[in-house]
Structures are given as C-alpha cells and as structure tokens.
Image 1 (spheres, helix red, strand yellow):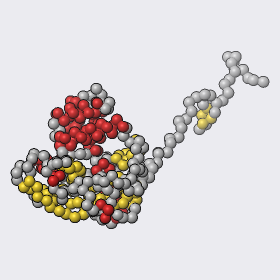
Image 2 (cartoon, helix red, strand yellow; image 1 turned 60 degrees about the horizontal axis):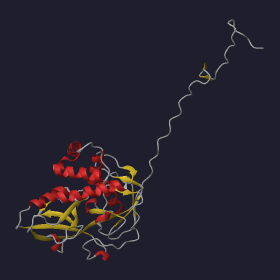
Image 3 (cartoon, helix red, strand yellow; image 1 turned 45 degrees about the vertical axis):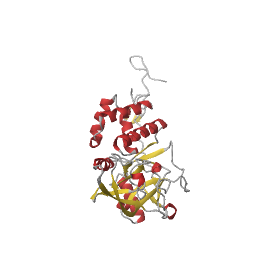
Image 4 (spheres, rainbow, N blue to C red; image 1 turned 180 degrees about the horizontal axis):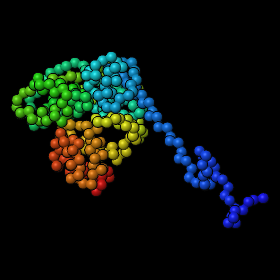
Amino acid sequence: MQRVSKHGRQPREDGPMENGVGQEPGGPEPPPAPRPPRVRPRLVFRTQLAHGSPTGRIEGFTNVKELYGKIAEVFSISPTEILFCTLNTHKVDMQKLLGGQIGLEDFIFAHVRGETKEVEVTKTEDALGLTITDNGAGYAFIKRIKEGSIINRIQAVCVGDSIEAINDHTIVGCRHYEVARMLRELPRAQPFTLRLVQPKKAFDMIGQRTRSSSKCPAEGRVASGKETLRLRAQGPATLQEGPSATEEEAARRVDDLLESYMGIRDSELAATMVEMAKQSPGTTALAHGLDSVLGEFAFPPEFVAEVWAAVCSTGGAQE
C-alpha cells in the first residue's frame, strides 16, 4: 500500500545516489573521462650514402639540419660533409631533390663531398646560365645549367656542384639568393674563379654531367597523395596530406618565377608562397605577408603580382 502525502500527491521515488546525495532521474550524466592523448606514430626513414653504403635508419628530426645530423650519426661522418639529399634515387637528379616534404615511404640518399675543383669564368653576357638552390644547411649548389649558356660551355661545371667560393671569397653559409646576386653583380669581361665541390660519385656515375633517366631499385616509390612529413625552418615538423595536383602545379609555376626573377629554385619556398597566396585576399596583402615573413628576399612588386596570377590561374587563391 502506497503512502499519500498530506497534499494528496505520491512522493517521488529516490533517484540514484552519488556521494550520498540524491539525483533527479534523467538528470545530466557526469562528463566522460578524457581520452588519452593520441600517440604520435614513430616515423623511421631508410637512408644510404648516394655513392654506396649499407642502409641506415633515422628518426626524430624536425628540420633539414637535424636530418643531416641524424644521417651523419648513422654513417659516422660530419654533417658538413653532406651537400644535399635526393629521394628514391642515388643519382644527382634535381627532380628528386629533398625539399620541405618527405613521403613516409621515401628512401633518402645523402650526397657527400667529393673532389674540389676550380674553374675560371669570363662573364661575356649578363647571365651565366646558372640556377642556384641550397640545402637549407649552409651549402648553395647548381640545380640547372641553361643550354648554350656561358657555364654550359665549361665542361668541368656540373649540376649538383656546390659553390664553395667566388674569387677565394667563401660563400659557405650564404643562402641561394645571396649567391645568385653575387654572381649577377660580377662585372662583364672580367675573369673570376669559382671553387666547386662535386658530390662523391659511385663508379656507375663517373662522367655523368646531368641527371640520367635510368632507375635504381629504390626509385619510383614516392608516396604521392599520401601523408608526408613537412619540415619547417621554424617550429616542429608536422604530418600532413601530400599536396594536391592543383597545389603542386601552383608551386611549380612559382618555382619557375623564382628562377626567372632571381636565378634560384626552391620548392619549399615556392610551396610556402602558395600557402600565403591562398590565405591572402589580394596582391597587397600577399606583398605584406611576404615582406613580414620573407623580407630578406626583397621581392619586387611585379614578381608578387605574377605569383598571385600564377596561384589564381590554378584556382588556389581568393580572386
């Protein structure tokens, strides 16, 4: 028999007890326990010296300098011995040059210092026909030689050669745009000397002046469209999806503009500029953004306008 209160209503049944205090039925449930933090996957990359070595494994780097340090540690060499790295080929192939992104399945080949050579050049034209890039760790090197140019006529100068000095003035530690400017400012009709360091070559690469189309067993495994490790000059490396076809095309066009205006190629710089253009409402904002982040390059206004047009033409910027 149920009791009835003096007001004629049935008393409520007691709700669930928590810490000795009754709770209303259907009341808010306690918040769920926080999820444990996501464990970052262990990223291990395979590496070899390009001229030949056992395979090593490296991990725990966040930028190019740290990457070189890890490779040097594996092979018991100094990081300053490494001129540049290529992905998935031991050849001096500038199309496979390691930039700011590494596919999680990529195989890293380190090209180390080989023979030093000096060449005398007479600047008979304003342009030498060189395109310069750098390894992000203090070495500028030749990425492209224009057909029919002054440098093209000097057989001793090869793609992949690091430029160590101009007229005995060392340029180790200079960025690619600084080296390109120094070469551009050399007077015409006056000979100058380049001290170059060529990458150490395996026997099957001796006599090679430009990249070959032949493949080694590790080639062809670039992780296109998959996650990549993005190396940054500042801040930690991040895992992200590989660039889309649109982003790759925009970055290629911007890299072409860098070569045309400044005599350099830099895929990571080009990708950074594409990202900035995508986030900018117009050329003025893009110019301000580039100046605040990359002011040392002193990009001319017409170059910024062409970058904006290149990114817009691929559908990557806000028109």
